[in-house]
Length: 218
Length: 220
Image 1 (cartoon, rainbow over the protein chains, first blue to last red):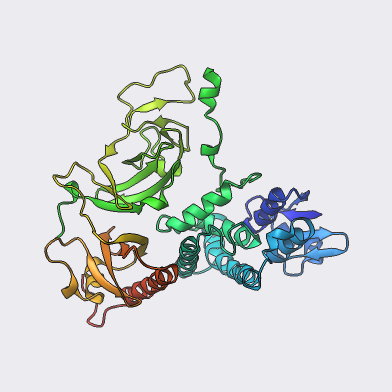
Image 2: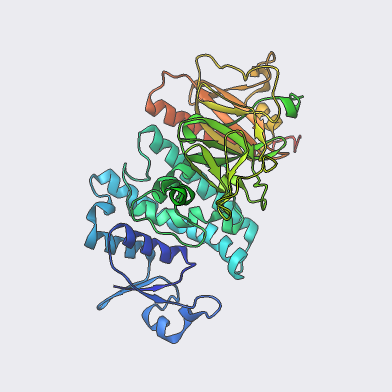
């Protein structure tokens, strides 16, 4: 499987993260998204007329929406990540996959403006992003009351992968995550997963590794 | 008016939202703080500023009984003194490298912090337990008006009574600045999960009401 990838893209990171957590091997093909705008080059537009990344190529299969790519990787290598135990769980996963696009178009667009010279009404995008984060927080509060840490189940599914990166990178678009204690706990649980990988702005939990100073002094 | 900011307790988080080995950001009237729980369970509050390069310590991490800065790994103990500088592993940090620690009390599921030692303990809320914390983009007076100011406890001035989803709840309202207020919702401990969910949802609606412009115009 070949992933057309950009290191600063939260949507590409979703794919890399799920691959890492499910022992899926990806061949990365870096795309010069900024400043080169390679995603709008003839080569990539041939693959994806929408001119967006990520793009996943597997033989003749070409997928251009991150939620579809997550579904494909999970179905192929780790079906439990699809969250299909019950009709309710399956529906919740779909609900959050759809919701994740709102995070992309609000917080993600604010981030593009703040980081990569994107265009748009920053204040309005931030306002809509805060509304989305409040929904996420409220849903996680309810999950905690039911004894679950994650969005669709008591284990991680592709729903969590889909919503995690743009929520975690909200501060890149100057939207604070300080007011959301349950989002903080949820992100921490995701970052504690065995095999978790980082992207710029989302680091691993240093508290889970040994103190290198203490190791040196021994 | 509210109590003097320098000597009164501010609720900053639910105990359950700060598990061991975790640091979170919070706000006191005097400024931002980092609240963290050590591996053994003790809660500490520091100024949210590393004395080295000014990085927010709430971006850092907790190992064992120490809070470390994410930037260069300087570590601080529960008394606020710097315990280790990774770039100089053989140096014992001088006592002058210190990150201010504030009085902290954990009581009935809430973490309270004060910027100086108050004369009295934080208020006790018998028969109530914290449900969740929400951030309202509304001033404290607006919240009191929407919740009906007459139900506010005049004796203590520490909470507002609100009926949410048919249940009597108490709201601890803590202003962060002119326009933002943290609201801690306290409920009876006997509620079912469904009832707690209903209250949580009603609290979201209350927030929407408080954030709408008031009919009489902005009163602050």
